[in-house]
Image (cartoon, rainbow, N blue to C red; front, side, top):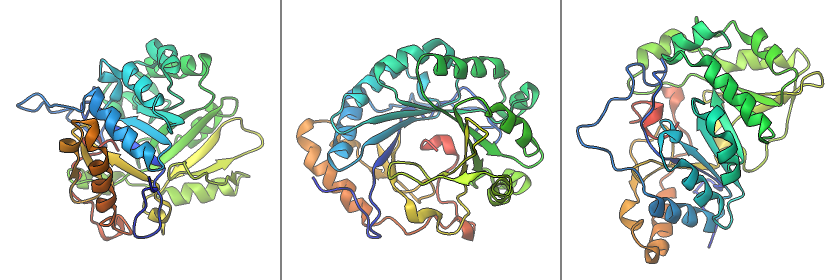
Length: 327
């Protein structure tokens, strides 16, 4: 099969697959009121449906799958899904993004199932600030999970930090001290505007570019980006075992290197985190015989992928919050 490609010659090696939009944290920048239960129990993608969508992407050049949410490890069959995805021919990286609450207990099991990469959200190294931002008093539990993940063989953990003015924006020295002797890639993520979070965005947005330039002046050196990497601009330093990554969606030409597509937990293809709507795939995920039609629908949708997310124009699309389609 031909590589998935859009009208701007961008090729897509990377699928972000949401397993659930349920989350047990109440992060101020995403779900400040917690997950709101639907009137009807949501029907998230089943394992056979996941198998078919991953197989379709793998047959068209995708080599990396990231399992997201909500909180993906709330799925009771999470380990089975990891094994299913990692066993799919053509997939050589299976990553997940997690809040880390189950990491200490299950890191070894997930590693054995085929998980290769972990991103953990840790928005503060101060337990009180962590509690304030996440709505959960689980700082020690999450940090123990990171230690356990390193111990069982994950060679590098990525830790996501959403930069928030007035909350964690003065904690850079503490974060740098933390990664001096740990193989952790600390990723500073610029706060992004979503439909329900306009006021929060205007109060707490910090430009990642200023922090990035500051660190360049302190001897940090840019690394070359690999084809399957996400959008982070990565810095390394000879005195640090860890690395720094910056995800800056408001940077000029941020979308030029886009290499990822998203499928929601309910089976919709999203061409952009900030798109207007998803393209339904679920009707084509019921039988193996529908694979050709599934691939054709995805490729056809790629013809509509815009050149940019248009966040610079204050346009955040229809995404209500980041948990709704996997961030």
